[in-house]
Image (cartoon, rainbow, N blue to C red; front, top):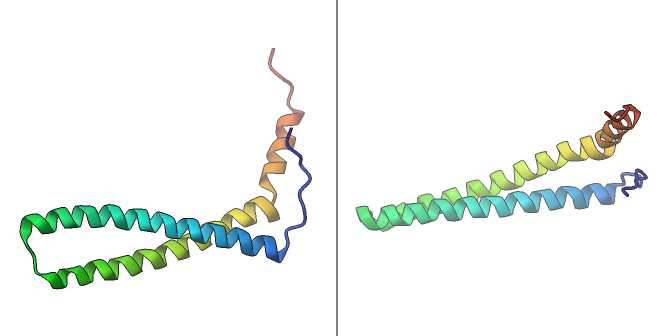
Length: 103
């Protein structure tokens, strides 16, 4: 049974929550970068480009890293607002409890 009692949303909880989502964003950006780099290296082997092209990969790495942090933080802020401030999940539970079960 799930408890509907939730502690107060403190600054420490919010900091940990946003840090976790930002970390998740960074991890997902690393996975995306790895997939892009695999395909790029396969293509590089076939075309035989010069070495300075790898600077593009370095720029892409930092751009994806920044995008991962920013998107993780913004998704974390959105979820924090919905789950801890608006408590959407409590309202949905109350609506379901008032309905009669179908026979």
